Amino acid sequence: MSIKVDFFKVEVVPHDPNWRSAFETESKLIAIALRDNVVAIHHIGSTAIPQIHAKPIIDMLVDEVKDILKLDTQSSEIEALGYQAMGEFGISGRRFFRKGNEAGIRTHHIHSFEVGSPQIERHLAFRDYMITHSEAAQEYSELKRKLAQKYPDNIHAYMDGKDGFIKEIDLKAAKWRRASH
Image (cartoon, rainbow, N blue to C red; front, side, top):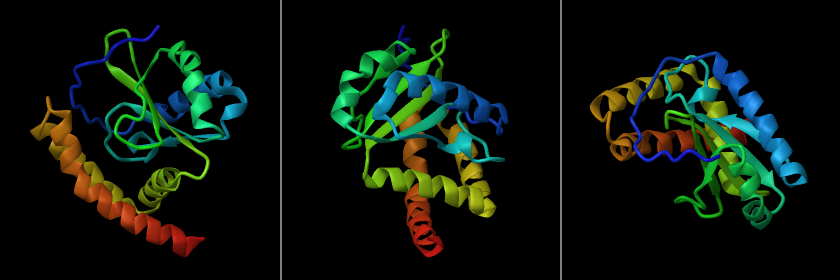
């Protein structure tokens, strides 16, 4: 049963150590639903970065799906877990799913890309950079808190406010990743 989530209140909360187990539980269900089409599922987004504030939504990168078109045919299996299929949702080559609880509050996002997509590396590099560079992570945390206070009812303004910082970190993270591999 998919629960429709239309209104999105911007709420940023302190890190919750239970987010990790919530990811692990949900990722197992997704792996079962997608069977042999999925190579890996990663916890991404701010809930994957310890000690920073985040919207309490578990972001998952179902990366390296072997066949993105096959994923389209598997949407019903993901929808059976309570997700709403959103198609590419603004990022070419992505399949995006979102899930809310019984109260209509968003709880999970799935971002899926086919093997070889540069988006996979971008998401993982950002997460790993932020985990390794706590000063940048805290700066991001503070920015998110300020934006959530300024735009509690405007998710688009909140996202736009983070855009420049994220792009800057994406560049640093890519350079850092290349240097460390």
